[in-house]
Amino acid sequence: MLLTSARARRALGAVAVVLMLGSAAACGETKNTDGKEASAGSPAAGEDSLEKLIVAEVKGFEVTGATAAQVRATDAVTASKAACQPIADLVGTVAAGSPSDTVYRQLVAASEPEDMTASGVLVGLSSYPRGGAARALADLGKAVSACGGGFTTTAADGEDGADVYSGVEAEDGPVGLDESLAFELTGSLDGEKIPLKYALVRAGDTMALFYAMNPFDPASVDIAPAVTAAQLARLT
Image 1 (tube, helix red, strand yellow):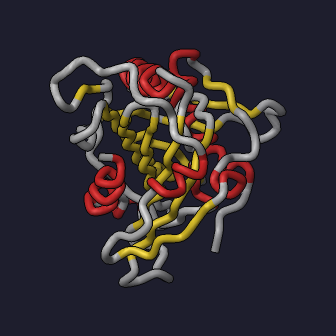
Image 2 (cartoon, rainbow, N blue to C red):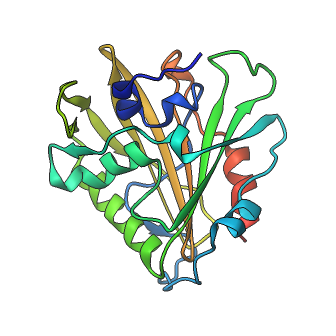
C-alpha cells in the first residue's frame, strides 16, 4: 500500500516510496567530524559514479531502487518563514540544495518486508558543483537552528491549504567524513504528529542523505546505524 495523495507526499516527503522509516544520529549545526576545517571538496561524482557508490547491500535489509519521480513530492512548496525554506525544499525533493545528480535506494528490514511497522530507510546520494554540498549543508544547519518552533508550507496553487511542521530538533550526526547534520522534523498527517528523521553526511562534493518515517507506527521511526555505516564505508 502506498500513500500517494499530493498533500501527503508534500507533507511527508518520500512517504509514497518508503512507508516504514526511522531515525539516525545527527546534528542540528553542521559539524566537521575530524576536527579540521572543511575542505573545498573533491570534484563531484556523476550519476554513473553515484550508482557505483550508493549502498548495495546491508545485512538484514532488502535493498531496492527508487527513482526521483517516485521519491519527490509533486509540487514545490513555500515555507512560511524564509529561514526554513531549505528544510521545506529537502522535504519536497529529498535532496539538499541543488545537486547535479541524485540516486536513491530504499532499504526495508528483511525480517518482515510486508509489515508496515518494519524498519526502513531511504538513502539518497547526491553530487554537487564544487563547494555546493558544503553550502547546502550550511544552509540546512542554519535552518535547523532557526526553525525549532516549527513552520508551515503551502503549494503554489494553495488549494490544499498549509502543511504544518510543529518543530525541528537537532540530533547527533554520523561521524567519519567531512561534515554531518541531522535533525528530527515533526510533521502532521490527519492531525497526528509524525516524526521525520534526516541525517546528511558530506564527503567532498558528494552528500549522503538518510531519511526515515512511518505514518503507521510513528514511535518505531529509526535510521538503522547499520545502514549509515554501510553507506559511509563506500564513501571512504
